[in-house]
Length: 222
Image (tube, rainbow, N blue to C red):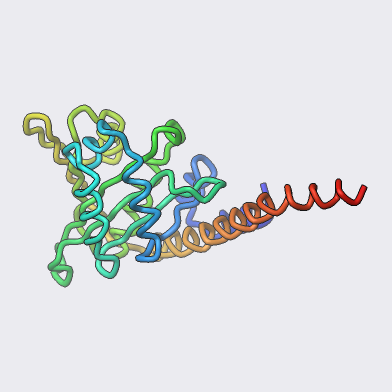
């Protein structure tokens, strides 16, 4: 474990520190300038995965429309990048338009590419969204789940959400606690840690791109 990681974990609240040591992954905030990567990520989902994410086998045109109309000023979008800076998992935390109302709700949606599954990214993004939603005054988190999505069903059940079944669809509702100094600090530290992680990956990627050229130049000199 690096000194930077140890310092970051020391700054987290005690419960967040336990989660960080167990399953921490860099989750970066995404903005309008990430729209191309968000679109590429969602278009890479196969038909069954699109059904799980959108409740229907969304077409490419429908996904393009969805990405185009994400309100980055009102909503929050998060992502997990691999070492090649490919967006392998993402979540959209959408707030109701009546955001000034004190008892507002937020809606959570998540997608993980098939090759990145089995690493807990869905659960990590869910925990991340819960923290951000409560820090912005949301009182409930809503998750619309396809009945066959057993992984997400397990995540929300463990979080204490109540589930309502309607045919093939499930609506989960999770009451959220008020924000605290600890939850605000957890969000701040998580953002800074993810930014550090992203910059490290970016620099390593640039070195990887330069390395073949350096090796070629060295061999020519010899």
